[in-house]
Image 1 (cartoon, helix red, strand yellow):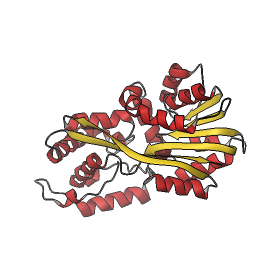
Image 2 (cartoon, rainbow, N blue to C red):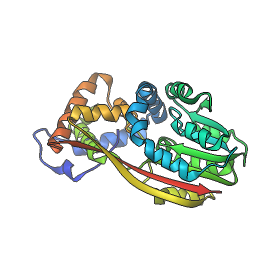
Image 3 (cartoon, helix red, strand yellow):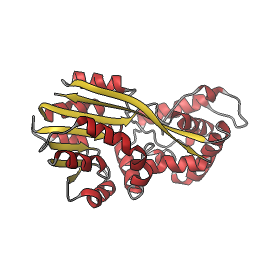
Image 4 (cartoon, rainbow, N blue to C red):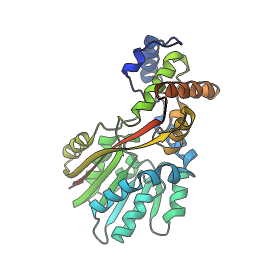
Length: 298
């Protein structure tokens, strides 16, 4: 689960919340029983792959296009698209560069859709992105992108490998959710589990960045020079708590959240989560995706 502490957690409520027990549960899960976060995220993306383009790609299409256009890959570039998902950025790279594009993703379900979408233009590899990069030769690639997935990996390790694999003069481009994305909604998940800390089963250890400054720092310590950065947000609105949760669990932005509790507790947890969202927002419910992006050159 995402943990977003908020001043609202200290407000009185009809149901008792056990904050010290919740803290203890979080610490126990963090130190004593680490979840295989990547496996759970991959399972989430496999599950939503058939609807991902409609629920997420179309919503963020313009941001991805803008980044690739600004990147301006030279004709004939050798490109790698990390966390490629259903292949949208991969296809943009292929059409812009007319070069060799390899898309890499851990989700076989997402790659099946990528093959359907642009398998005639790109090659796709089912692999953890860091493992894939480590297998590439030093200075062998012109362009490496990572769109909407860096926070599910090991960001600094991935960026260091990107720097190693890029040719001199090659470029890296990243766009991703920031750690502050969805905070309005996900604070309610903390409140939900604070009422029943024992039902928190898995703690998702995502590594989303705080903003473009942090991405720029990672570029710099990896030997890359930042040439562009940006941040912003996109908001859509849900009409009910249930609709908000449904949207969260089909976009990938909260990948793995469905594994925060045991299957037998899911209905109860989701129902209470929806109630708390509706208590917080009496009218439309804002779902705010905050993002960061940056381009660097070697």
